Amino acid sequence: MPERISQVTAFLAEVLAPRAPLTVIVDGGDHGAAAQFAARLAAAFPPSARAWNVDAVLGLSGSSGGVSDSALNVLEPAADRVIVYLRANGRGPAGEGERRAQVVIDHQNPQWPVIRRMHPRLADPERWHLPESQAFFAPKAAGWDERFGDDLPAYAEAVAAARLEPGDVALDVGCGTGRALEALASAVGPAGHVIGLDCTADMLHEARAKGRDKSAGLVQADARRLPLPAAAAHAVFAAGLLHHLPDHAAGLAELARVTRPGGRLVLFHPTGRAALAARHGRELSPDEPLHEPNLRPALTAAGWTLSTYDDAEDRFLAVAVRKP
Ligand SMILES: C[S@@+](CC[C@H](N)C(=O)[O-])C[C@H]1O[C@@H](n2cnc3c(N)ncnc32)[C@H](O)[C@@H]1O
Image (cartoon, rainbow, N blue to C red; front, side, top):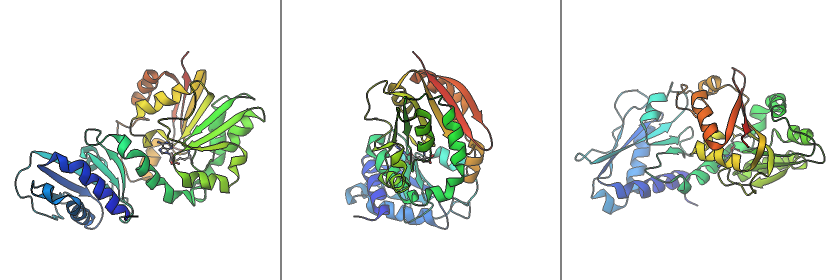
């Protein structure tokens, strides 16, 4: 299996090469990382693309903050320009660099870069979202609960907002290691059903290792294409999922499809948006999908009515009701 950086640079080259002549700017990262990544990316372009001057790569702001890290010379002005931003923790708020980039790469571990965002004009998310999401979460699965396990009471409290009844069907979409599953199972009782769905096999493996498959059926599935009939569920619980989906509107519509009229959607995170952004070294951006002015109309368009919105320091909770 090729090393991860080769997978990422090969895919970027495949997507970008047909756009030549092109200037690719690699920005962000720590300690010369932009130059190194730029060199690897340039090497991944096919020789025919190089003839078109595709390998003009320049790091905009390395750890020194100024214009630096020029890996290759810009040979001549190119018709198009794409900015690739390397997201690394520990170098202050990354808001502006990320916002102007068409490609954002998680670069906390330079040996394990992961594409986190790509402008749909460059590549259909169908081509990268699932494998890159799995690559992002798989290494985090072991030890996930040890990092965040204290949050279980907050999950149980959030599950209560789903107002489940005994005998109901509840889904936990993007269930991860299944931290909400026991609370969901106790809400629906022995006559009910809980299904935990996640795209990352390692997360479901951890859930099983913790015995959470006793509370729920566990299914590896894409939240954007759930293997369930319409109106199958009385409630959908989704913790920390929505902002990981490339198309939030489509994601909310798929969750609506599988929920009965009057059923509830609980969007939860055990940390408020501001505290979470600070933890990741980011500034809160007004275009985030969970920001109320964005979330409310997106829910409405997808067939939901927002009934609760609470973005406190220590939790994010939004509850929506499926329209008839
Ligand atoms: C931040 S984690 C939250 C996990 C869990 N809900 C929790 O609160 O501990 C996000 C989860 O969403 C999953 N995920 C990301 N994209 C997905 C997709 N398209 N379909 C299904 N699951 C996805 C990831 O594998 C990961 O387990």
